Image 1: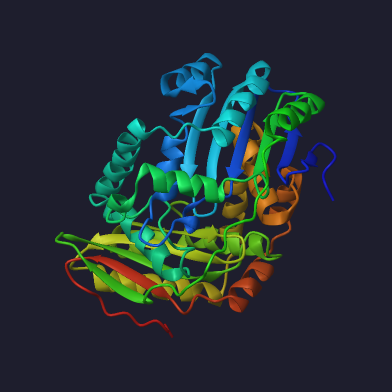
Image 2: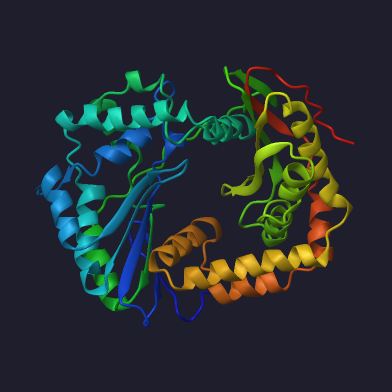
Length: 415
């Protein structure tokens, strides 16, 4: 059942428009999710989606690259594009009176991009530079490599691409990615802020209604990587990544899973920070996060430490993950609630945050969760329900990836 203050419209071509008016603000924002992410990258061409995400904004419709930037700047659109595993995402926030014009421009971007040959080298070079910079950021790299191994292919494929595959890309192959994947069916447009819903519906129908639907490309699922892997890197530090199964966003126990991870890694009073860093001084950084795809999820953990203390850091971190099933204190859950309430208040005041949230909700749930519903879910959590979840979905069957000069001994089944 949809909340009273949101509206959902599905165009004949399959594009879903979800709207949430926020009459007390002066801005409006949109989040457009097009199902053409990195899981669609052909074998040997990981990076197609990432390059397309850059190239697609270098001219569209009647605008060349410079003109397109100018028209969006003149509308005051604070915008961003990103390539994810499932979607290319386009988002923007502007003054409420400029929203309809901004949506018209994005109608050109997703349906009539120029994808200019002369801009392709620069687009590819930008992705290559980002991937090269990643080599100097092993903290980020270990999580990317962890995802590659803990999820089955292509779900763990790096959305930013693979540096070795970039040389295989051409403007023609990237254009083929666009032709194969960009479609209105399964595209989601979330709009939040100050607007007239009937006007926005008319604009979206006019600008996106003639977009021709097409069949979704087939996704062939394969195996993930080895559950334990080490990447040699000459350094005085060791980066540790750990993953284990959890429940996705649509699961009835998602908020219990979220709270469990919050107890592990939610500020300086969390379990991992206190036990691994503060009491033992084993590492300079440690955290865990809940990562959810549509049908599967993982808890992703990170620890960065010195080579000398790496083995102990890994052992103690695994022990703390398992120990969560022994009990959770009320004060730990209370701190999770307090952090969540702060985040909800900030989201309530952000049109861009809310447009992204309702688009994400539709993708995962086929409905919109109000902030009040999220608040109620968090308030209804108890230490018993969270602990019950942890015991049903315990930390085990770990995937472990390390980056550093020495491989570590890994016991996947921690007693």
